Length: 379
Length: 97
Image (cartoon, rainbow over all chains, first blue to last red):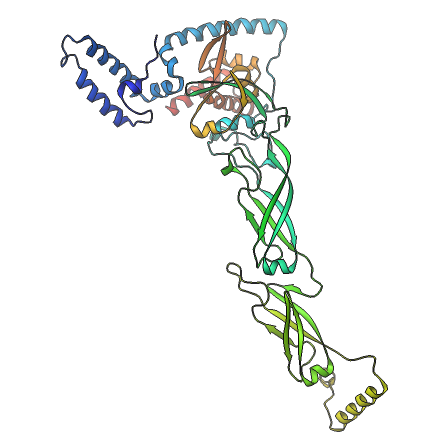
C-alpha cells in the first residue's frame, strides 16, 4: 500500500491548527462531493481520500500517531499482527532464557533509579546519573515525575580566580587565562554514548548504543582552554565577573555554563586598598611639617605635587578626590589618601645639633605647651 | 545506516526518537528479563515492531521510558506488586487522556 500524506491531501501544513484543518476539509469536501460531481470516479476517490485524511488528522490521538509513525500508520493492522508475533517471540525467548538462566541487558551507567545522560540528550530532563559535580540533578522519582521535564540541560558553571595589580584595578587590564575545565566530550556530544542510528521519516531510531571510547562513557573530558579576559577598571578585591557562556561546554552554545571570575588584587608595597580608597603613608621631615612645603608624592600612575600646610601634624590625612579606584556601576570613585608620617632627622651634624638645641631653648623660653599634658590630665 | 554522534538537538526539534530493545534496556537500566515480565503483564509495550533481518525488533519511545520510571517507583519504593502496578498505570493512563 502506498503511503499517503494526509496533510498534502487536505492541502494544509503539518503544523496546521484544528480550525485550519476543518476549514480545508470542508472546502475540499464541498468541491469533490459525489452530489456535486455525479458519475465522476476521480472526484469520488478524491472525496474518499479527503475523508480518510480528515478522520486521521482531525483526531488528536490518531494525528499524533500518524505524525510519529508516518507511513506505518497505514500498516496499523499489520502492526497489530507484528505485536502478536513479537509477543510469541518474546515468550519463546523468555522460556529459553529461564531454562538457561540467562541474564540479559548491559548497563551503561543509567541503571538503578534514574536514566542516563544519554536519555536526556534525546528527551531533556530526567538525567542525573552523572551527579552533582556536573550540575545536572535528576528529576525526583515518583508521581511528580510522571511527566518528564523538557527543559534543556545547562552545562555547569565554572569558577576561577585571577590576580591583578592595583594599577590594573585602577586602569583596567586584559589577562590571558589558562583554564583546565571539564568540557563536553566532542566525540559523543556529552551523552557518553555513541549510537548507531537511522532516520525514518520524522523518527530517529537508535539501533544500538555503546559507551563513548573518548570519554569512557562519562560524557566529559578535561580540556585546556585559553581565554582572553578584559578586566574593567574599578574592580576591587573579591569582585566577581561573570563571563557568559564561558563555563562548562554543552552541545548547544546557549546551554553553556558561565565562568565566574573572582578578582584578587596583589598587595601593593606603597598603596593600601581601603574600600575604594587608596591610602599611602607619606613621610615628611619635621621641618616640612612645621614650616609647610611643596613636595612630590606618588600616585598609582605617576606623581603629584602636594602642598603640606605649615604646622601639619603626624597622622594628618590629605585627600585627592576621585584618585582612588574609578567609579564602576553604582560604586562611586574612591579617593587617594595621604597620611602624613612626620620624621625627625637622625644623623645631625654638630652645627645642626646646635641649631636644633637653640630652637628647643627658644620654644621652651616662650612657654610652648607640653604635648603630653593632655595624657597626664586624663590619667 | 550511518554511525554518527548522538545529538541533543532532537528534543528541541521535536524529533521522535525510537530505540531498540537493547538500547532501551541500557538507558532505563532495566534487564531484558525484567522488561519481558513487564510486557507479559501488559505494563509496558513497544510502540512499533519491525522486521530486521528476519527477526522482529521492538522499538520503544519516550513514553515507555516514562513508564519505566513509574513502574520502578511503584514496585521498588512503594512495594506495589505487578498486577497492582498495572491497575495504577491504567488509572494514570485514564487520567492522562
